[in-house]
Structures are given as structure tokens and as C-alpha cells.
Length: 611
Image 1 (cartoon, helix red, strand yellow):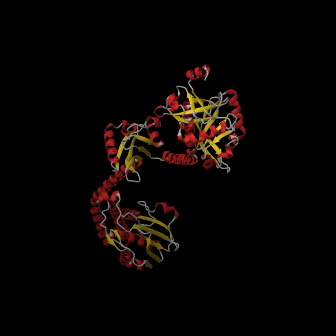
Image 2 (cartoon, rainbow, N blue to C red):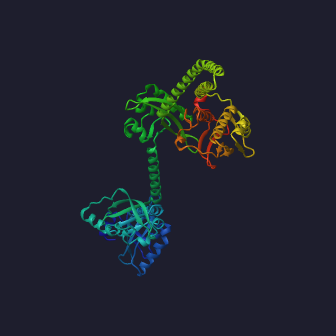
Image 3 (cartoon, rainbow, N blue to C red):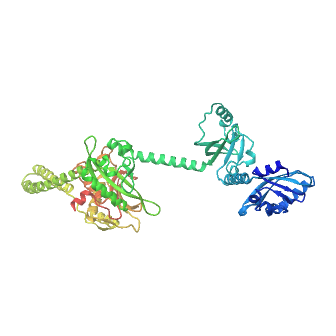
């Protein structure tokens, strides 16, 4: 080699080799040891392609042979194994040298190849991620042209990726955005202003089949080095099902809130530790506070209990008990904003999940002020009636004996007088007897009843009433009929008091039938739990002016009547847990009916007081 070539081979960072036409090394510079793994002396006479990586050896020989034969230019790349078996990527350029020699120039491109491989692997990984994404991903340019689309667009949008690539992204948009989208992009190119980048927003997307779905769209801008314009990457997530569920949930919450707030009573919702989570409008209006002022606070520290320090610990203890699954209930008296005393029936109930675990607590407050007032009035009336009864008893005892004596005296005097005077005295005696009967009935009405219940067969009881009134019925020319189905169940009742009621009703019917007639006592089942008794006659019926007053004390249309019979009958029936009333009968006369429970019912407060 001449001096210039030797100098170049010595100072260059590339591999320089002189080959013969068989590819054997005639000379090589010092870089050979690092690239080829041999010293220049060891390389002499060795075929260059025997030092190439085995996987690239055959292809390199064939390319060299074609070049030597003059059939193709030679610019090739292969791998060689250098020091410590390090693989180097060499890009070869061959040129004819002096005589039959060949000048080989090899440039180490290992770092470039590795960089390209990393880029290629990164691109493969990126494409694998894009292909594997469940959410659709689209890339567009600044004019809306779709550059790339992953496979998920077909499942979600109905388009194959190749149907979208090259087209305008507006194909996925319903009107009016479809017509306006190009204008949005033009304005962004001109001003750089947009509201969609780097945010997640909800949009409607039009599928290929024309259906509209709702998606969450995230758009980001990517500036590719060397490209004059940016690209935009959009990630779509189909939230149609979620949106429908959210809408249904919102509607359910709105309905529940409407019911919750329209509830007249006080209703709330507590966490297990007693923190107030929700409260209805009625409860808030009772204290004149806003929802934000009480939500999140321990329930016992809220204004409902601020005026009742002694109740705070009780409420706190009640919440602890309810959190264990117990039902807690008690009555509370407090003063409202108008300085009025208010009674509340307060309770806390556990709300459990499907597994029976307590999740929430439900406090409820029912205003029972009117009930308390009514109960107090009832007690006062009962006490007054009891006092009247006691007074009437004393009064009757004080008056009865003098009345009896006067009555006897009048009759004794009447026996010694003439007929005219005897008539006057007999009238006075009858008036005194009526006064005595009125006092006895009044005493009976005011005295609390003590029911002596036992099994009572109504057909047998009605038969006894008929036998008791047989002579009266005969004198009045009244026929009494009893209608009863077989196997009528017995009831728990006071036999004697019910007999008194039926005697009174039948006797009233007889007195209404002035010229004789017909009275029917019928028995029947009324539903599953009650029996019905009807006493009906074919008399003149009930005067309209008396219909609303029949069962009031001292109201009567009968000459000589006390007006207490029906009032006492109603009292007896009610203390049995039943009802009594009057209406027009099918026979043209009056019909009095009684409805009694078959089983034993809880007696009224008045009856319990007597017992």
C-alpha cells in the first residue's frame, strides 16, 4: 500500500482491510483485533467471511461473490465477534484496489443498530398495547383525518379500523357537532385555543348502525420531532351502561328523597357510630336549622337534644343498643320554638344488609302531643265520671229511702180517698217510681264496667232473650224471629251484659210496634274475625231528627223513657271491643246492628280502669 493509504488505515476509527478476489485478508489495520477478535498478523490469509457471525456468513459470501462477478454493487451489513465475543454490527463498503486486490471499508454501526432495535421493540410494544386496549384509541391530524385506530373501535363503534383510517373523525359525531367539527379544528389551528385537550369529558358518539352511545373522551396533543404539525390522540371509554345506571340511581334517589322529605314524621339515617347521615325536612323545620348544620355530627349533639341535657346520654346509649341490633323506643317531652310542650314517640331501628349485618340506624320521631292531650282529657273525663258515679251512688242512697217512704205513704193515703183523689195520688206515685228508675239507670251508666268474660254462644243467648220477653211480646202481639247459621263460633263476652243489650234493643222494637208486628234477630259471620247481630222490625223506623243523637245519654223519643238505654248499650258493646249502630231496615222499620270480635280483645282504657 502506498503511504497515504497506510496513514488513513492507521488514523481512522473504521476497519480497513485489503482482500484478494477470494475474500482472503492480505492486510488489515489495528482495529481488526477489536472487531474481528484477532491481531492483524493472525488475520493474514484468513477469509474475511470466516470471521463473520455464523448466521450472517453465507449471505455475506454470496453478496461478495456477486460483487466480484460484477453483477451487483456491494453495500452490506453483518455481524462479527470481537474481543470477549462481543458482537459488532459492521456496515461494509467494497471497492476495487490496485491490481487484483480489493479495498474493504467496515464501519461499526453497533450503537445505531441497537438504537434502531430498541425503537423497533418499543414500537412493537406500543402497538401491542394499543391493539390490546379494551377502549377505542384514535389518532388524528390537525385537520381531523384519522391516522390510526386500534381494534377496539370495531366492538364499540361498529367500524373496522381500516374503515376509519384516512377518513374524517366527524363520522363518529352526531349532529350538530358533525357539521361543526372542522370549524373547531380550524379555530384551534388559528388561535391555539381549545377546551378539550388534557381533560376527560362526556360526549355522544354515533355508531356505524346509527345508534348513539355515551363515552368519556380524553384527548392529548403529541408533537412528533421533525413533523411540522402535531397529532392528537383520543381515548374513548363507553359509559352508556354506567350512565343509564347513574340516571336510574339519580331517579331512585330523587324519588326516595321526595318520599323522605314529604314524610310528616321526623325521619333520619345514622351511621352505626351515631353520626347523622341524612335527615328529612320535617325534622329540620322543627328546629329551624339547615341540613348542612347537622349532617356529620353525632346525633346526640344535634339541636334536637340541646335543650334536653339529661336525654343526651340516653340517646347515646340507645344508639349503642340499636347498633347491636336491638329496637329502642321511648317517649320524650320537650319545648318547641313557640314555647309549646311537645311529646314525641322516639325510636331507633337497625337497618341490616343481605347478610344480616347492621349497616345503618333509622331514628324516627312521631309527634304524639295530640294523643297525649286526648289521653289526658280521657283520663280527666273518666275521673269525672267516676266521681259522678260515686256521688250518684251516695245521692241515690240518700234519696231512695225517702222516695220509697213517700211512695208507700201516698199509696196508703190513696186507699182511704175517693176515686178522683186516688187517681191523682197514683200519678204522683208513678212519677216517683220513674225518678227512682232514672237514678238507678244514671248510676249504672256512670259506674265503670267490670266485664266477666266467658265463652258465649250467641244463638243460645238470643233464645234466652226471647224466653225472658215472652210475656211482653205476647201482650204487644209481636212475633220474634231468630235467624242463625249453623256452627256459628262462640265469642268471649260478658253473658249478662250482652243479654241486657239485646233485651233493650228488642224491647225498643216492641214499643215501636204499637199495633203488633214482626221483629227479627239475625246472627252472621262478618269477615273472619267478627260476628254481626241485627235487630230489625217492620215499624215506622227512626225519625231523621234522632238519627245522630240515638246513642247519647238522656235522648229518647219514648214517653216515659230515660234516654239511657242505648247509651248504656253502646258502652257495653264498646268495652267488648265492638261497634253498634242503627240504619233503615229492609222491612221498612229500624235496624240496630252490633259487630263483635270473635276472640278476646284488649279492653278499653275505661274498662281496664274498672278492673
